[in-house]
Amino acid sequence: MIRKLTLAILAAGPLLSGCGFQPLYATADGSAAGLRDVALGEVAAPEEIRPLVMRAFERRTSSEPSSANFDLTVSTTEQAQRLAVQIDASVTRYNYRLVGRYTLIERTTGARYSGRVTSIASFNVVNSQYSTLFAEDAAREKAATQLVEDIERDVLLKLSDAKEKASRAKL
Image 1: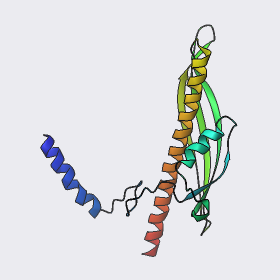
Image 2: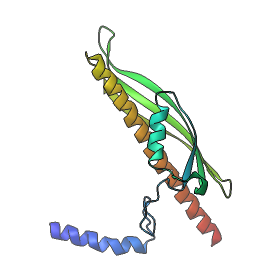
Image 3: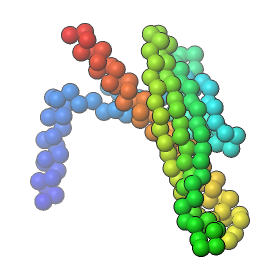
């Protein structure tokens, strides 16, 4: 069974390359694509979330903004939604939601790509205030990281589509 599965996977490799499949997160030279060609511009976000979003973007975007081909601006809003409300009106669980709107501008052509992504992380409210604050901070960090990952994926898909349309237009 395992042997047949292995053979099927090995046989699928040449078929994928023959159909024009290109991985989204890698380039032909083996380096990671991601947002390495993007310079992060303005990040408009609430005071508590801005450093988390900035840190998550810094791990993914260009370390040399002057050599990047794209500029990215992001604005985020946050919302805590009550989930588990007890009979005495106390809340024991929250959904922490981050909504991000982004605009990516290509420096050479001025082409604009924009989108909206949402990330959600949950946390519990417990008797210990410290534990609740820690859980809320962890949910914020998780939501910020997820937001940046979603923006990265969305941007890569839009750039891939634009590249494909441009190559079709040349034909």
